[in-house]
Length: 346
Image (cartoon, rainbow, N blue to C red; front, side, top):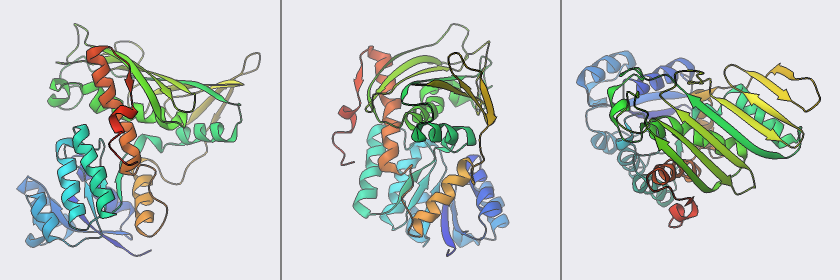
């Protein structure tokens, strides 16, 4: 495999994790040849670490995209910049891999889809929670029919963020729909992934308890009917004071024809059958976890392999669930997902 050159947009926080992952785990496959960040201090520090000259460092991503000639562009900046940065990269001939969510609005996300289709360039979105041992084992149980047909899935996320700033950044506590945009964007995608179908109808409710540290809805219940007959329900709670199922410990229960599967933290699989003994075992390991899986898959795509499972044309089907959940919270009406995507050719 040829080494791929990368223009990196973002240099600290999550982007810093990307850079460390590239240089530590993919040094034989990725070379960063340009870096854009609004902070000159970040540019100086990362530029020195990466051996980049001043001509390879930019405070404006549009200038970076127009100047740097790279095999692809990595984007890990706040969501409101995802779409303009991705569009600038693709219009300058670079495939894109971008942090979730696709964008901050549905229109911005659709613009990314259309630009990828217009240019014919790969564009993938990070959905790292899909690529864990226990999630992949549940998919195998489903696809191999070990417990018969899948009936429904229940998902639960619960974190104790009752203290202001306990979710890391003030903006997460202050923004509208922080639960949905910062949390449920992962979990609704996971329910779609585990169910093996696309959502037809979504309905639910959001609220903010009086003891919350959030300015807007921190809790919610949402239900989805998928196009393959599977139903899903989701409990999201960023003001949890009891049993927590926080990041990497979210609880999922899949009800099958001949039993039920539970997964949560770690790699433990628990299978229940009526009248039978509970079966507990460790999920087999997968070659790459989380971001590493997605980076490897994207690089393989660039080398002529299969498109990423989380390519933008597919991932928008998960992102739109957040938009539909936001709107059903406001008006209490069920949302038909095709209504949101009818103007796209996907």
